[in-house]
Image 1 (cartoon, helix red, strand yellow):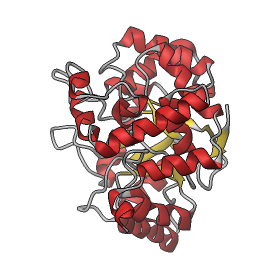
Image 2 (cartoon, rainbow, N blue to C red):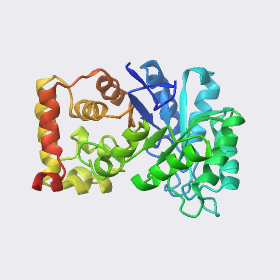
Image 3 (cartoon, one colour):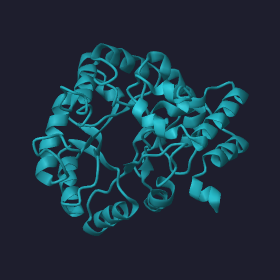
Image 4 (spheres, rainbow, N blue to C red):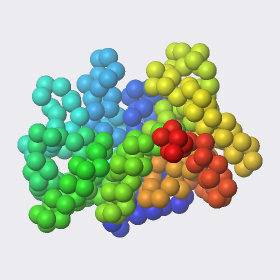
Length: 322
């Protein structure tokens, strides 16, 4: 599988990252372990999760995904073959939220315990914390890196100006800088990433790991009318795409997939992987057979005409109006 360096680091990661948000949510533990085995066998050795996953499920408190991944790593003895990314900062309840140093230091220990490892390859601020200075947060991460508990740090859900401020703070204070960014970005939702964040990541050489790379499954083509969303865990998330522009994107994907003897999901991921600055596209799977689209996308190269057609079909409405 193709790999790329994660930003300005020597860490090589596959161009598709396995999303761990489904573990313990739409995928029970036994099925999650089986899927993780198959993913690693297929070369998908970069796994992204968060301490929050999956607190939104009734009866769960967060940490379920990390716990399952930790059981898998421990039982298989494969930590040296796996690249693990997780996140901190979202509301875990009982005041456990934000990026204050005291909380980060406690949260990382909880994640390490659940993951059954002594280090996290990529530790990410899950969201910005306006109540904590950027320097304080980066100094907390510096201590974790010095202690060997974290290798690299990243950010998620930041706005462009705040990300630039964080990078300048790191430079000015001689602190570790964010090496990766996780933005919401895919073929059917190109803004605000392209106008707000892409210039910043290009300026500082930050690796980009888009989440919702398949738009909650919409770009697989399985949701084409409102009734397709009924009874689906992500059904409420994809209804917003059932409009002329979203369906136009699916139509363009259908054409490209037919021409390339591929699938809409593979083409959509290949488009994302080909975007400037993108390091690895995050995509989850709930069945082992879904992994074929992830691995297939990693090997699929779109020609200039295919990219131009998809660019045109997915152009944000504001750009189309210009």
